[in-house]
Length: 171
Image (tube, rainbow, N blue to C red; front, top):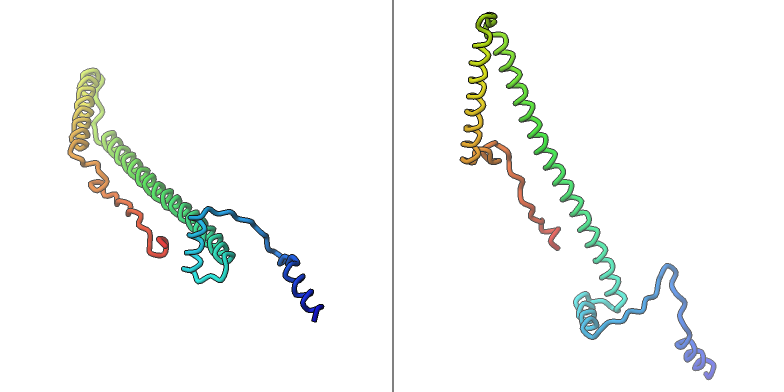
């Protein structure tokens, strides 16, 4: 009987061996933090503070990973949107170039050759017409800019949908 009592007394006092793959931390909390851990322990129906800390570490790292994934997703969406917009600009520039090329080819093939005796008068008249066309184009461009004709909706460019997190991303 004495042997059993001594064994029980010393077993309680002996340090327990560490579980493999576990690390021991000593955490100091202020009173408010201790109350929050106790409330969380009660809310989670945890058996020990270790379960609460395990939950916090797991949830914290999962949320960080989810946020990191969300940021990468948002950057991916932004780059896709920018790529589409730049592609639209490239398409408009190519269209403008094609129209200009077609007009120049038409003008060169349909206009008669100017005789040498009228060449200088034709050049001065062409210069005046060229300046008048440029002034008219500049006025029209300014008028359209002032009337908001170059807005995305007027140009047929769809607006990007605003980001709204889904229900599973909010939690």
